[in-house]
Amino acid sequence: MSLIEFSLSSYNEVLKNLIRHVELVGISILLGILISIPLGIFLTRHKRMAGLVLALAGTIQTIPGLVMLGFALILIGIGMLPAIAVLTLYAILPILRNTYTGITEVDKSYTEASRGIGMTNMQTLFKVEIPIALPTIITGIRLSTVYIVSWATLAGLIGAGGLGDLIWTGLSTYNTNYILAGAIPSAILALILNGLIGLLEKILTPRGLRGSRV
Amino acid sequence: MIKFENISKSYGQTAILKNISFEIKQGEFVVLIGPSGCGKTTTLKTINRLIEPNDGKIFINGKDITKENPVELRRTIGYVIQQIGLFPNMTVEQNISVVPRLLKYPKQKCKEIVQDLLKLVDMPYEENAHKYPSELSGGQQQRIGVLRALAASPPIILMDEPFGALDPLTRDTLQEEIKQIQKKLKKTIVFVTHDMDEALSLADTIIFMDKGKIIQMASPEEMLQNPGAPIIKSFLSKQIDNGSNGNGSQKLFAEDFMRTKVLKVPKTSRTLECIKLMSSRDVNSLVVINEDDTYLGTVTIEKIKEQGQPGKEIADLVTAEVITVGRKEAAQVAFDKLLSSESSYVIVLNDNQTVAGLITRTSMAKALGEALWGEVQ
Image (cartoon, rainbow over all chains, first blue to last red; front, side, top):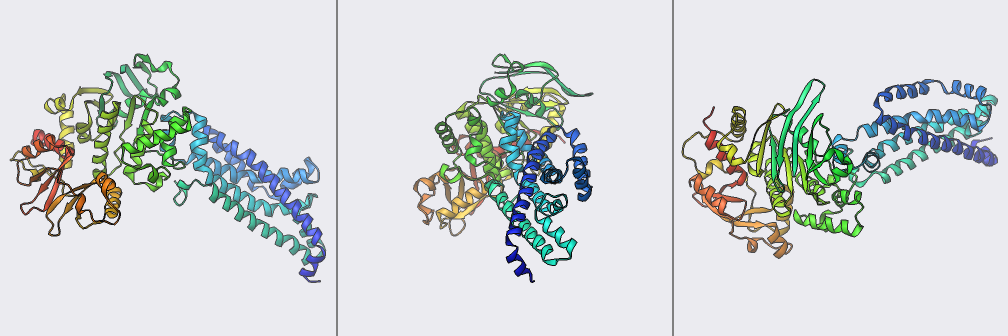
């Protein structure tokens, strides 16, 4: 059976797993954003803790995904929940780091001006620092998304479904069609999300900041 | 208006300000000057509480500023910084109206404020309001920086070396403009600089600081005649030596003080190219010459805007309002003419009627200082 024939006959199975894959990625990135951006902003206000927290997040990043999934399996059990917990942990670092550096690197002249003309700390944050750091923050989200798409294939191992299911099935039965039916949509998904978020980044970058990053 | 009472500030063991007291009257243009590290910027920043003194009190209109909310206080004091600090994510209009918007002025009022202020610096609303700071020249950016400080009509404006990063020609123009704005709007301005020429040409009162103390507080004339300490003297002459080639005490001519970098255009130039040239160089008038390079007159941006038509030659718009002097005329004569003149400069001509240079009020201030201390060293 060729790959094309296989795809046509297993169309529903591929689609179902693709949707589940998007769910896994979407939820963990969303949670990652909800945790990382406020935490990143908090760290810019408490720089002494920043080194420690960023190092910790960096360490989590170095733990192999399989080990983490194993832990999650033992602690939480099988299904989507442990997979999302693990993927969220991995999504945090790039967003956190980019939020932190993006805001820290906002030129001092802007924050001095904003304080000097009478903005409160919150106004400085929302009217000046976040808009200027936004392109950097979104780049962090883009990086996270692209590699969470590929890491999410591991989630198939603990019964969370997704394109990983097809790949693991293929690997255990020596069926290339299954492997490719999981790998190719996963790669295409990564490319598409990368492009979409890149576009979002362009749209959300204030016109005054396009071209030259300040 | 602003009163300092025994203000001291130190960081750890290092004393930055040592028991400073002085008073600034309403409508006064006060320039703080001194060598780096003298405490002038710190003094400025205590006024809007960006820096809190360890000791002493500051009163604005009789009210102790530590009793006020620092954020509210800053909204009533304009602030201009050297790095300009226009918000790159906001348009010119949004930048200018940022304080009025913080104060929740109605939209219509904010727009009127922006329109009125842009008129003040000859930057048409339609053309400029929707640009971003990155699309403006350095001089234009700092003009907007000044307008941002003026927007909520604060009675006091603080300026921290606002023109330090600009090229000399632009700086002269902006100095002239800020002086005019101050006269027109009757603001109290506290201005920090390390450039004595700038201090001399702007200040009603100069406060000279060194090592956290005030050495002398006097009008520019008085400081020129009576420098209160050797350091002021040397500061003045050092500044002046930097600026020219030291002509000593020989008889001085107009040519000794003119700047030779002059923007000249032939009378056959088109209106649009002149406007472009003026805005790229941040000037509001150009010297116009005939085909044989002789001087014809000057053309101002107002004149072109009022009467010019796109594509037309500027020959008809040229006026001879600006006074000319010969390059061998005595400096004193040239200065008298400049002082009695309406415009901010006089044009120096060669014997064959070609343009040699021009003398601005700043070059005159520089010359005065040099005549007094040229021989000091």
